[in-house]
Amino acid sequence: MHDRELCELIGHRIRQRRNELNLGQQYLAEKMDVNKSTIQRYEAGTIDNSKKLILEGLSEALHVSPEWLRGETEEYDSDVTDKRELQIGDAMTDILHEIHLIHLGMEGDELEFSKDLLLLMLREYMNFVNNFKIANEKYTQSCGKEEIAKAAGFASEEELNETLFARQIHQTTDTFHEIRDILRKYPRNPQDACQRMRRILSESLQNG
Image (cartoon, rainbow, N blue to C red):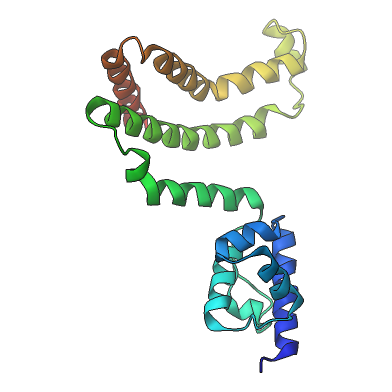
């Protein structure tokens, strides 16, 4: 016999955290490798959800501790706050787990090009985030630069801010434009495309 009161408490906390992260029951079912109806019953507390393996699976999927699910603490000590963070984590985990399958059938320059592209995009994302933070802090709010805007020949402070914002993130914009051009060129001249990809990746590594 399972403790019905404990199971109901665990079920309530499963539902609470799932809703907090804006997750559907199907997502949780897939992470737990069970049917959606099982998650429904876990949340209702009508079946035993207090077993160690079940709690560990739920805590991993919901990024909380088993102790929090059991009501032994009010702090679940997690940095994950929304569904997108989970989806990003899932995507990164899938790439790491399946990198060899993803590249199955590739060899030589084709394989190197694919890996270089992934590495470049990941590094460029980090660069973008840093510059995007600065751009938002400095240039998305009106900051009393009317006179500066006029002196610089801009029609308004908003136009000046838009220009400065674009300049702050121009490296990312330029990099992705070049990636687009390289991908378009690849079918015509794979060797040249690979060389260009290696060059901009090398520049990115040096700047990092």
